[in-house]
Image (tube, rainbow over all chains, first blue to last red; front, side, top):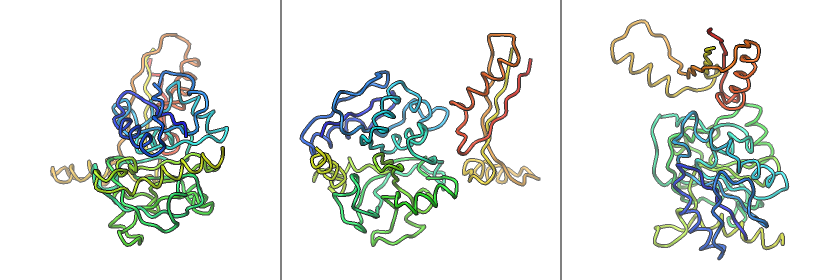
Length: 233
Length: 80
């Protein structure tokens, strides 16, 4: 799997992501600066990593979403290419129109940095095939604006089309407001676009991929992507 | 020419920051505040003198960048 990690000023999770990708896919990703206008030829997966692009000025992700490289990312997605947008990347993808909705300030107005539990809603997607449907995984979050909001019709459509892939749940896998740490609509942690090739999620699976991190629950997402790309080839 | 673009949250969108400000005003003992919703103001200087062109440029700026129209409304005023 050939991957490309986008780099914007103020991003700080790109090296964690590159390490996870190299570890699990066996190939180091290309690091692509925001001012570039093209992705490396043959890119299978574009990753928009986490951080604080442009200091979160204006709105989280708003300025990065208008960077020159984003036209190439939109073209990649329009051809069916995979895009994984994590944390600030999710905010950027929403601002760029790759995904519907917006990430608002956490409902309790606190920056939250801790492990959370996610339920994998279905396993028959490139972004979840490394897991079983209903499986609960432990993954860290670190954000102040992760509260997913969209108009009711959009949320209804996301649910009806099975586009919510990850949801905040209790350790036992149940829906519980106490475990929806940012107040997201329907406890939404991760969604895909209509075509199913762009995933946005607030949690950081790249930070739970090695035994030394204390947990390897994040590996499944990357392993699933590698398998998907290998089978498609 | 000078202009002001005001961006506010659409009604019905939860505004945790506005709520926090509201709570702070209450704890300061400021009386008579029923509710607070926060937003942004952009003061912009325009190069030309054509008012209609200026308004079109400001609208484009608001649509493309200053406001996220999924959750926000904006108002454009050319102030002179």
